[in-house]
Length: 448
Image (cartoon, rainbow, N blue to C red; front, side, top):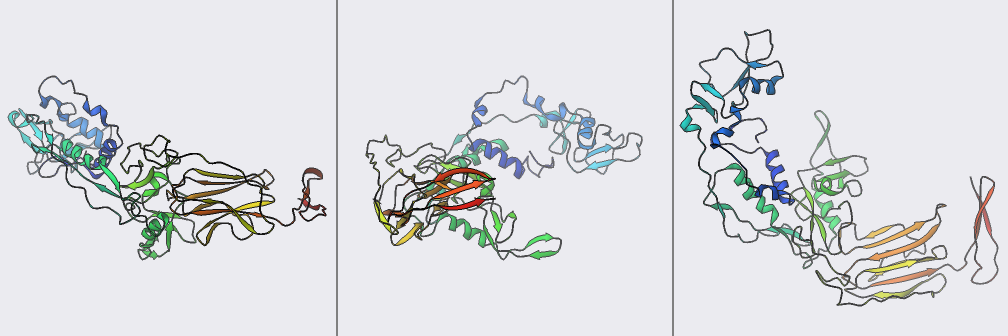
């Protein structure tokens, strides 16, 4: 448990590493095995590790296979407080000491054994009776970790009825905190800024903290989110990228609970992936950790899809060289999916209020996620290319529910050009269409 094998002055303690491993074990729902009752025979003191691993064994574990217990003792040093070993098999005159106590149950004198660094008699070695504790009542929910955009809140109960001193039971108590966390203000209070902005704000707060790439030489950088380079738990470990540079560094222990993160695969509709104690965890649409609750196709959390209806149609109109609105998507619309299969001659644009968020400049847009990949109410625009890097299909997907009306527009080129290309002297495919105003002709270019 303790990273150095040591004790404190009172009792066994968990090292930070072991404590975190145990908390993670309980929080991920893998702890069903602890409900199995052990089949133990004999008194509990028979399970003391020193009864099975003598001093010679402990020396070999600490210093290697040739080490053995010292053949002489120092009367000024308590027998159980330090592990004393001969390191060199041919040298019995020197004794190397490791500043950790001998294992409980190690024989230290006639009819005496080590316990918590002290040499005690059998009556003191006996284990106390097992006390079965009960849970206390639930505490009030804590304050939200964020003021908007979905933070994390928790309430706890403790295994203290009666109060236990056993270290394992104490760890079980703390694990309950992790299991009972909820996302607060999940949809109630959206932020004016995006979830990416919240992550960027945390990265920028470390701009004044020096980075020592070389010993005794402080360097300062402007830090931005490392989105696209890390994901999952790694993304939650305060990973930031130096602006204009090509390295990524953890700028702290972890992002604030509730900071959005990207899972290995897209979360179910309505679920949210958020950082929680440095790990990327999935909250259901009800805001409860690992609840598994999702939205139905209508956007209702836990619904059965009966509260809405599917609307589908196609559009082939539009004016040359101007944007024409062919669809206004209302508030609360869900699962909007639009495909343009003729992006050589037309392209889509999306307008929210008076602002274009996809295209709007008279040319095809690049792949876009608005406002950011971390936001639940995001719009995803993708342009698909042929093997020859010509536009083949535009795709627009809006999971919803929409928070504001958006307008979907189409742009048509005034003259639809055609191209014939050759590669390596061999003629390839021909893509031609007549001009909308008559005439024609084909432009040619060679691909080297």
